[in-house]
Structures are given as C-alpha cells and as structure tokens.
Amino acid sequence: MNQKKLNFIVVDDSKLDCFIAEKIIRNTGMSDGVLSFTDATAALSHIEQVPTTGPSKTIVIVDIQMPLMNGFEFVEAFQKFPQTIQDQYIIYVLSSSINESDLTRVRNYPSVKHFLNKPLTSNTLSTLLEWV
Image 1: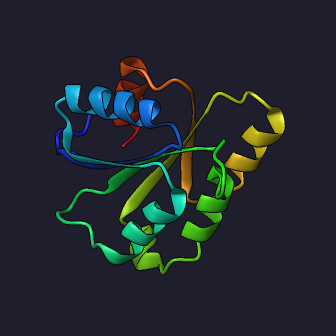
Image 2: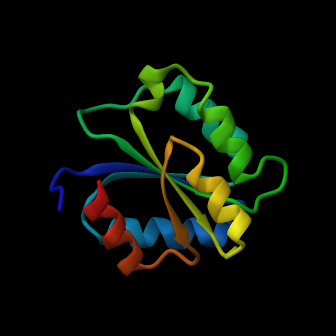
C-alpha cells in the first residue's frame, strides 16, 4: 500500500454520506485532507481553480445519483479539463446502483479508475488505497 498521505474530495448530494465518508477517510490515517461537496459544479470549480499540492494525486469519490449534475456529467466535465489538471486526480465512482448499463458507462470513462458500491466502508476504502 502507498504510504504517502493523500488528499480526498467527496462529491455526494447527501450531507450525511459526505460526513460518513469524511470520517472513514480520516480514520485511515492516510488522508492529508478531505473536502466534501454536495454540489458537483462546486467540486469542479474547486478542481479547476485550486492547484493540488505535493507529489500525490488527489482521490475524488463521486456519487452517480445526484440532482442538478449527476456523476456521469461530473466526469464528462472533468474530462474537458487540460490534461495537466486531470493528471492530478484519480476518480472513483460511488453508487448504490447495480444497473449494468451504469457499470458499462463508468468503464468507458478513461478518467474513472473504478466503480465502488455504496455505502463507502472502511474495507472499501482500504481496497481503494491499495489501488493507488
């Protein structure tokens, strides 16, 4: 497992899910910082405007089912950013959906590393950290 501390961004319209994800991430001892956004457009603005610090990439965990801008739209907008910005992030899609078309759609995005099932758990996060 990668021993560097990582930055995380959680994008989920549920404040409770954001709170739980933040707690789980902080409890790993692997986080250098956690930001959460209940609005995907706000998360995109942050990614575009705030440069990441340090050599590690920032992990982005984004929910698929959100109003206004869903996870797919978030990823599509993210992929329009310059490659220099995209290279600073690793995106994981989080959803309670087990819809095969959603899984297939997620696999077609080059910037999405993996699909995670909701809810985010300590075990899921440990596995995710092994992939980094």
